[in-house]
Length: 185
Ligand code: ZN
Image (cartoon, rainbow, N blue to C red; front, top):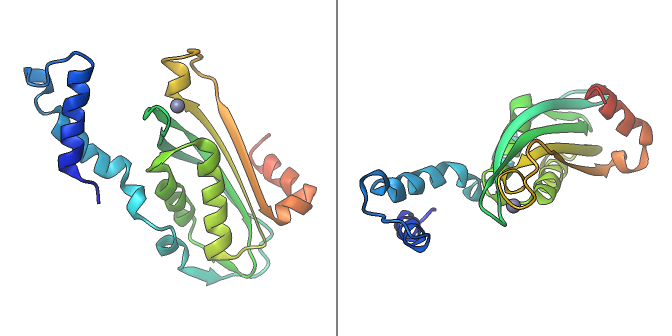
């Protein structure tokens, strides 16, 4: 559970730390607003993707399932600034598939935490391997990081791309090519 009181105190201190007056009219409600917002954007910390992935159903002869353009918002754990973009998830079923929305829910479980993109990509792939037990998984994420756009090297629009492969995708290059083709790459 998110400790709302702690978050409120911290935001107040933060505002003081940057030289603001937390009691001025525009900021009075800010600690409370942020504490409530964190319930949502960090709510993934209390979730396990197993609840979404355990309801699999039987399906034969599926070569590959691809859910692309899953939009997500996450928070970079180094700066607590947003990074956001699209996740593309593919798996090779081994007789079992899940509802397509469950793939998006799995992305959300891990996106709604302090994150780094590389880890997010790997956690999605590993959760699918663990709970769905397919023959292989591949996840590609492309995202813009506000810590790159609005500070530091200030390169707005630049995308970070991360790829993780598990199982058959590691051995069979043609599967990787099929996935890229389905993404239009
Ligand atoms: Zn960052």
